[in-house]
Image 1 (cartoon, rainbow, N blue to C red):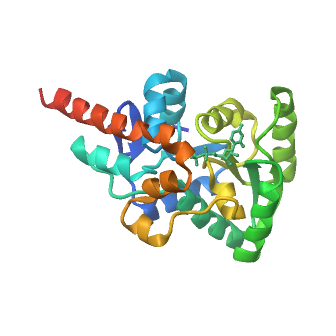
Image 2: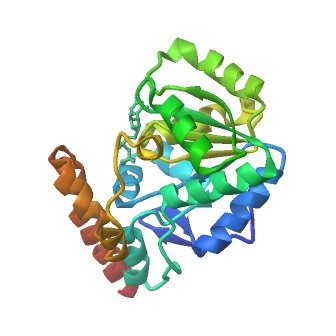
Length: 249
Ligand code: UDP
């Protein structure tokens, strides 16, 4: 469903919501209560750069019900473009806040993605962290195309209202867009490595890095193989500056 009241900023072709964390959580909670599968995506600079080259991904992001400014780069980008989003809305934090809410409402969540076994550990950890949470089902993220209809059936049969899809970008966005009309959940979120962090197989950066907006630097430091992916950051900054000049002239 298209929300004509949405206030967004266009960052290199991707419409990102101008909402605070609290406002995003309220809107996502409303979507969680409404029938029909809504989609929430959490683009960081790397995803925005992917979408610049991949029209299908860009169209999917722009058809979402909410696109949050996941990385600090997106926040700065919006400032440079002269139309700032109020703050960073990290996908992981939003997913956790929604999981806490759903644990109080009593509706179920389905955990989809990550390596075999990770979603089950995340389920146990969530049951400890949010007593009362109903994890209706899990499925790993390493499947064959011919398994996909069965996965959709499993999700629908579980009765879950919230679906976390953690397949990495752009796989998760494309998977959600492909099956959105067949899913009987109310809200699908594409939230990358969230299950790994919940399960403890990957760690979030220490608080100080998050406060200083240096979470990205910590992730590169801990996992130098990610370095290649982070070259998207300076490219993103350059493109934003170019866009700003275009707007001015
Ligand atoms: N993943 C998956 N299926 C795939 C590829 C990746 O389930 O075919 C999972 C991977 O195991 C990881 C998650 O997707 O749990 C996200 O990985 P990444 O760290 O690349 O995502 P980010 O949070 O950086 O977007």
